[in-house]
Image 1 (tube, helix red, strand yellow):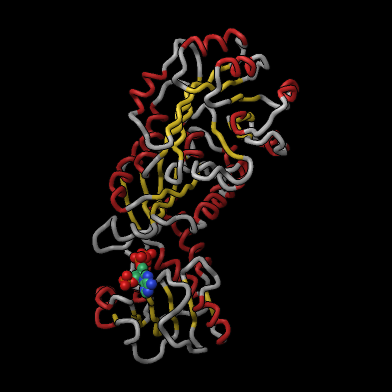
Image 2 (cartoon, protein in one colour; image 1 turned 135 degrees about the vertical axis):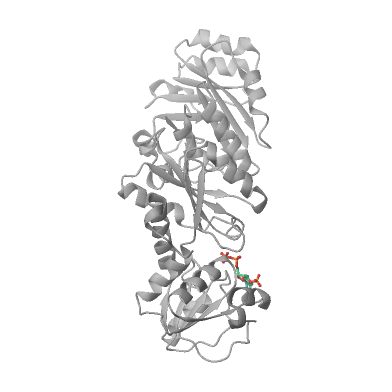
Length: 433
Ligand code: ATR
């Protein structure tokens, strides 16, 4: 069940009625309120007033809401009193921790009540492992439960919760409340296909940091929807130190695949950049679709065999593109701020930023630099920039100069499509290995 949280009594409720099952009135956030309005409610409701005295909770209970949220920690007679006033109201005993995730097992023991209710645990996830810990707790719980990991790290829990058994999921009407990691009603439906998620849905996701700018969730979820595949793709902020714990942790959850972005691409297997992980019954396999994705979109404009290709940057993407371009018969050079890394990738064809001599046919920026570039543009050159920003200085100047340009978006979509192929049929595709 999905509840839309209302923090303003004047909110337009048309979408709420159409797309969610419940409305949660956060009376404590209302600046003013006419209680008379509660008599003719337009849909099933949760009444919530944090830190309210018993007298106020009693007043609310007289309106006989379908659900009433009462914070954990009140004396038992509080809850019993509310039940007596409105026996049809289902109580939600809720716990909020805006700092950290406590020991969930002992917390739950403390929260347990001698009557039927829904337990809601919302805690601030301070890293991706906190999120996994909470989701695993939800999956293994035998009680009616809602578990929400708050904050940026916890954001995926807003979608995972439905799959793993949340009694009620919560979303915001418009812009989500800052810091809580809430997802809006529109985003849940339009991007994450919330209505079609169920206990059989499989998880895919992007891991890395930063992840904000990646359009992966839009692209992959759209593809899942059009293929009628029961899967959802989420973005997980994962740091280097958390990577091994994260990969281990997701084995207990229904994960099937991951996309990997910086700074993790070179952390999964030594000596090799990885951007795709397949998970199957505890078996983990890797591939990289960056190289093939980039070269496929370049070769839509003409074959690279015999062409001189210059790559700027020597990170994971550069390595993958370098290998694929070599495989397809190009003569490939790498320039990089740190020359030694360019040499590591391309041997004697690796250079410092301004050391490269001679012309080239194709120039590819694999760095995240958007406001400058280290070459002189030649009009016959094909320019590709793997940044998601279509207006980097390089692309703007290249257009002015009359060069053909390829945007990062096009490469992104090709490599993401190849990721889906790898996840769906690992055996049929062999990329960049
Ligand atoms: P990815 O794995 O996605 O390719 P990465 O490993 O972070 O990303 O690689 C980034 C590349 O961009 C690196 O080669 C980096 O240069 P260094 O090897 O000298 O670190 C390059 N890069 C990043 N920021 C840069 C900047 N401001 N100027 C020049 N090069 C930069």
